[in-house]
Length: 331
Image (cartoon, rainbow, N blue to C red; front, side, top):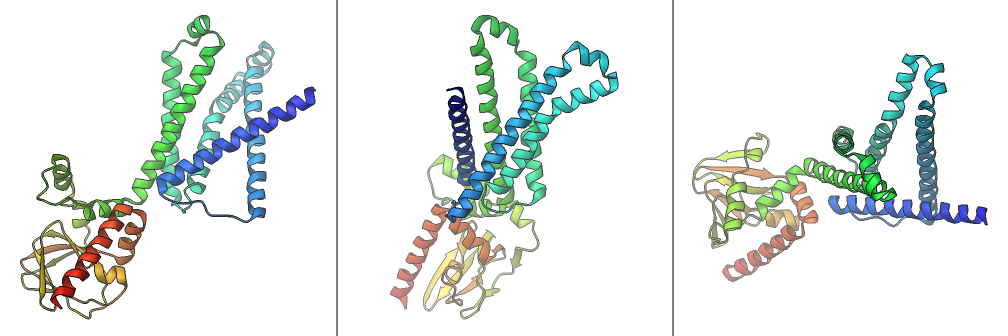
């Protein structure tokens, strides 16, 4: 009966650990807007075997840390081991959980998103997560007298503090995963904000504030590689050109002409989506009405933004439909 209980307990621990892993991966993929791919059965078996090895390894490491910490508290070890070695062992045991946490978080940030992120960004996010949790743990231990909690609540106090630390850890873990996502895809996120910019005629104060906040994207304007200036009357592109870039008007006005139909765009507007979305040559010409400052968006970045942002995709399709219906009437 004892062996059966141990087997059941081991299976339960592994099942809970696997549920935790899957929930963590699902949370990271939700942040990065990626979907899990179907894997062959053999590949899934390898993953399960790896998870078993990981759970056993973590359990063994935690057991060794706990045993080592207990042994170091014995008077025999304090008197037998030289003070320098004793201090070194105590430091190693104290920081081993932090190092272990850093390693696990780093691997999860690398594997879970489903995309390869630069190691430098991964390292920075992992470091921030680990240090933040270490600071929280230090101050929570400093300001919380566990002895008093044990006197009042008994064993329940230890469980409460453990759950609190687990809760805070996953908050920090997902927070820095979100920060990692924003840092890596900052250009696409800012581009989506520009593309979904509310109209200047809106009466909603929140939307108006959002427009004032994003209408002048200094981050893009100051980048010489994508910031372009045209004088009044300059041709931006002609019908038949093979360019598929998208343009955002930071300052000035532009007219887009196809056949006898003319549209005017001012600051805060996009133009040139048709050639990019359809993958065709330009069917219209664009001319600067005044001195303009444009931001040229690469077609690949624009299409990636549409793929990751349903609202932007919906707006692009709406504008495409409106474009063809209007030009069909004037053709």
